[in-house]
Amino acid sequence: MWIPIIILTAIGIISGVLIWVTNRVLPPEPESLKKAEEISGELPGMNCGACGYPGCFAYGQALAKDKNVFFSNTCATLLQDQKMLTSLEKTLNLKIDRNAMNKKAVVACNGNSETIGTYLGVGSCKSANKILKGFKTCPYGCLGLGDCIKVCPQNAITIDIDKNVAVIDPQKCNGCGLCVKECPRKIIKLVPANAKIVFLCSYESIKDIPGREKCDFGCIRCRKCVKACESGAITWNKEKSIPEIDYSKCISCDKCIEVCPTKVLRKYPDFYLKPKEKSKMSQGRDICHGDV
Amino acid sequence: MNNLLTIFLGLVLINNFILAKFLGLCPFFGVSKKLSNAVSMGAAVTLVMLIASIATGIIYNYILVPYNVQFMNIIIYILVIAALVQIVEIVIKRTNIMLYNALGIYLPLITTNCAVLGITLINAQNNYSLLQSIVSALGGGLGFTLMLVIMSAIREKNELADTPKSMKGLPIAFIIASLLSLAFMGFNGLL
Image 1 (cartoon, chains in turn red, brown):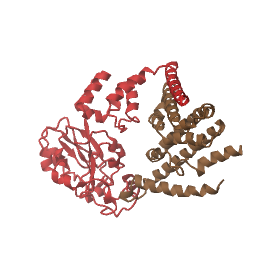
Image 2 (cartoon, rainbow over the protein chains, first blue to last red; image 1 turned 120 degrees about the horizontal axis):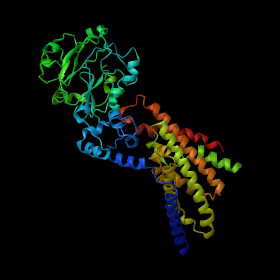
Image 3 (cartoon, each protein chain N blue to C red; image 1 turned 60 degrees about the horizontal axis):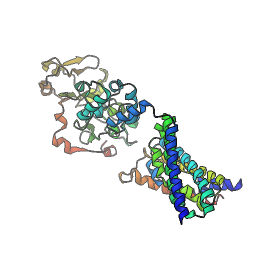
Image 4 (cartoon, rainbow over the protein chains, first blue to last red; image 1 turned 45 degrees about the horizontal axis):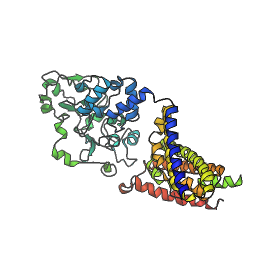
């Protein structure tokens, strides 16, 4: 009866001693790893990868080596949380200008742009964009198949079925910019979080006139907004032939929104928060087989 | 030699850990979403299986059998495997940070993996010698890695397929696993 007890105890003690010995014999952990562990304790721990590093721990390691990484590869989730931001500032001994860095993503398309035909292929914008440059007459129209939905770590993106356009909830969005990189048509833009207006059209070149004429909901180049703007925040971009907004000058008088005939300029974030609008949204990309 | 080959092939193809013995199903579904993850998980499991088999083989053949206390094997194996994984983790962490980052989450996961305990118990059940234990651990680990790689490759392709909404994700993975299991039954006549 005593033999099993003695064997078990002996093996337990031997394993314990072995662990202790390996712990002692091997060189101690490098300093940077300890600091990285401390820093990654302050990070959100979502491992979303929006900062450009594989996971929060790798980001912590990079921060431990050089704290200026925070400015080149900003953690967007952290910027939303004042408490966490303050504690990280303390640990890293950094000064962070909050207003300048805080951003929100906006899908710059009004939706409803005309389709060329029915698309029944693989349900992703990237695949659809490779066939005849997408199934919309406008080369800058949202395809609404929801590639951005999949990458969003905050689940902030939905598809508005009526307009067939992706919509980003400004309250949930943390401005990480993953969707901006994911969109094959490059129509998701980052705007300052305190922006009062957004321009929901993404024309890139003056040559895209055929697309322009067919989209009833895009910018028609009337330039009324430029004339209406009192503070000079809106200027005309001649190359792209669209208005450009300087958010630092905007005084949120809303005059441009009133005069815009196609409602391409919208009030932000109020435009996204109407309950009527919200009820129409639905998660997912079921639309790709039916309406398109 | 012939005997060793039988053990090896038997564990890789015929008595595959996942498809025939239903051990290690948790990482089979949990870590088989990406090919790269599957490969590193498989490598980590094979390594731990090998080390655990050597240690438990020594304990079984030179301690448990002489004192006639084979019934103690489960509890002693749990203790030994947990301690070993702990030691391996410390060694990797101190010597090779890059490898530690790559394997990071998987090593502690393996401690509670039934496939590792399974291989040591199978060794004990069949009264394998130390060399036979090592070969069977290599076979088991390779079979596990093979299944994980096949499954993750299928699941990566399957992401693009037009799966019905109710079948997306795990349900279709279970169906794929059952079809794979059926296919691997064909190896039964091999030996």
